Length: 227
Length: 315
Image (tube, rainbow over all chains, first blue to last red):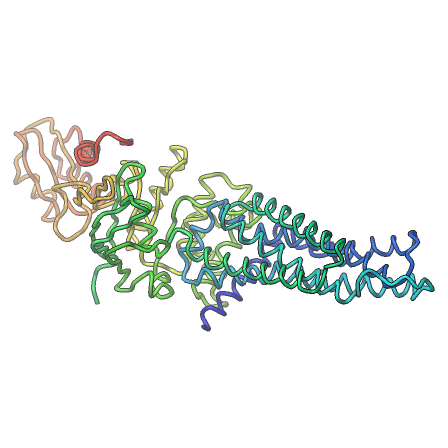
């Protein structure tokens, strides 16, 4: 077990080196900076009826950006080495393949979710500051905190599907396409449920569970590659 | 402790309904350099992947210094360096990044990591390229950097899959010289290739693989092995005037075995390589013997390859 934890730590560090060298690490700033900035512009220049509605708008903007980041980073963390055949080098090293991949995924998925979290907090603070509670009695479409949790489920779903697709296709580019298509399908389904007034917490929960299953499947299959 | 660095016993591998390897058995002594020859698709890379613990055999067993690379992978693979399937590396990473990562995974202590990476790079003559991204390195330099990665952690056995594939003739020769140097330092080598020169210039022994079955296991230079496992060589000499076996033996000493082929020609066999050959020629000149030519006859590897494996891919 300690060996697996050590492999996890070493590969988390390896992923950080890769993010830094490829400059992909800057992508993690997009949900933190661009999400709240876009949201603030909307708060100032659109007739947003209340802070709650502004929060919902900002959270959707920030989650959209975080989705692009998690798709890109996950696809590359799993698929880049498989496409370049770098895995023939790393698989012959004395470490657990699954633990190594968990270490790398923790950095990219964890990093993307944390970035979304920071962005969400900033969006909510800016909405309170720029819009205020509002006098309009129209209730927001969602409870913002609930929406934020639901969006986390969506992000996990996108990450899990992309990771699984990267193992199947052995290509970061094709995994990215699979992740985008999964995102379109999830948003389409969510919108349909919303129009039918049937959108409940169950939907993002299911998305989160499917994403988690995607990650587990990815880890199992990754350990079996060439075996 | 056994002197065997590597033991492959009855190994088979089946993908679906196709047998890629059938009952392959061989062992490699410490310090031996063994060539693994066969056409594309014969099962060479699969064998190396099994030895490196990347692929599980369907049957049989593998031991690296007595350890199972599948079940005791952490211990077994620490002593092994493997370059399989000519891997690529993301273009933005530098050689130093890769070597230090390998050092970390191989359990090199933090205080030693930088030095271990540098030592491996020195062995492959790529120190000055350590901080360059892989995307800016030539194919030859990339291959050397990858070989340096396999040397991190001071492994005693190297598995090399087509190490000179895709290199230009000069880079290929450079790499063969490097591999000969590693062999001289006592590393055990298993070199899978379909280039006969890789084997004849680097290896002591050759294994022939055809359709997943081992069809030959013999010295690269037959008749030159002195039985000690040391790589042997044969030099053919022509003389301008008749010489006797006693004159030649007296000039050369007991390390060289002389066989006269008529009064003006002789074959001299000895254990060793370039250094011993230079000593041989110097001794003949010093003794004033009328030598006019000296040559190293080919190992006849191409003919033996065709006999055992067939016409495919002999290059």
